[in-house]
Length: 404
Image (cartoon, rainbow, N blue to C red; front, side, top):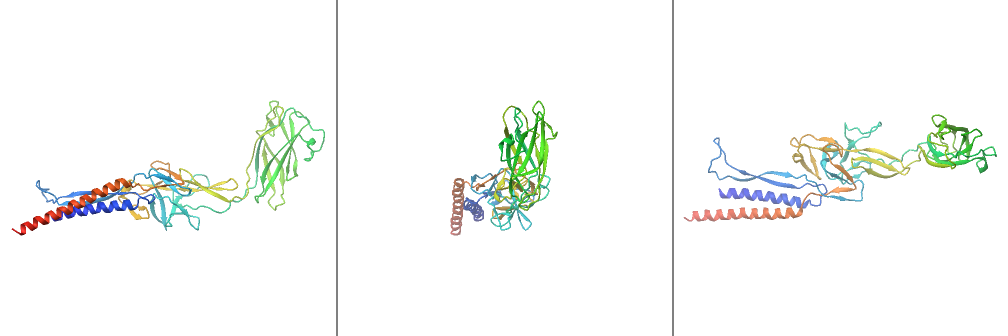
């Protein structure tokens, strides 16, 4: 009997040592979660229960329990490295088979998909054309590397002040090369349908009637349409046109692009004081843009930035959580799979209820504490030695009995 009891203790100590060895071996594995060997005592039991004088049948390993405590987060220089701070797992797919991981060392494959080192595709929520994301279904996150098509300028806003004490020029008609034929001018860059930039020059000429101005648009030195009248009230605010919208007509560029037709908004313009000033100029066109980088927010929103100042939302990183994470089955590559014990995966986004936040340019390190593991190793080693000594002692007792 002592042999069997001591042997069960040796087996338990060996399981403890193996668990500790696996933890130490993965001390530098990104996203690794350490395990702990847990044991239970054994008793022989009959229909009448356990005898009050029963000594016990030894020990057994009841569970190798995973410990999902937070690991340290270390910064990296790669925006595609993602670290989870708090609850949740990244969702990855291998031809439709879902797995879950805390290892956020992602990269881009030849098709532009965000993948793990083993090639599993990171899952996310696709953007909707109306805004937001389709959180009703998972999809592969793909990072676009193509250029952004240009957009022709169709509207422009100009916030400026025209001097109320200005006098109408005595030299007419308007000539851009003769500053005596106009009072003030300002310019902005506009774009045609091919993304080519053009200089739009706006000239302002004080009208003969009080509080009136004539605005004339030139594009690339060519007059566009006819002058448009701006009328201001005695308080200096624009009254005509009532909505502030002015359209000079279309201009056909020499680049082969479609005719340009720009509506200017002067609704915020004023006629105050004795000085001309432009406070803001904005237009909605842009040229062709090349990818400059990928940004991922704390909530997992993936955006591509381009050289033309535009950005494009590519998707949102999906996370998963479980009622019992310790019930997940380890599958290697620092990944887990759902089991009946873990419960069904609950999908969500970073920062949502029950989910942590994402940090881009960082990785979560293993949660293994080497010092604690070394102490546990010594303890398990002593347990192994004590049980081995028990076998030696039982052997001596047996030998003594055989000599009687």
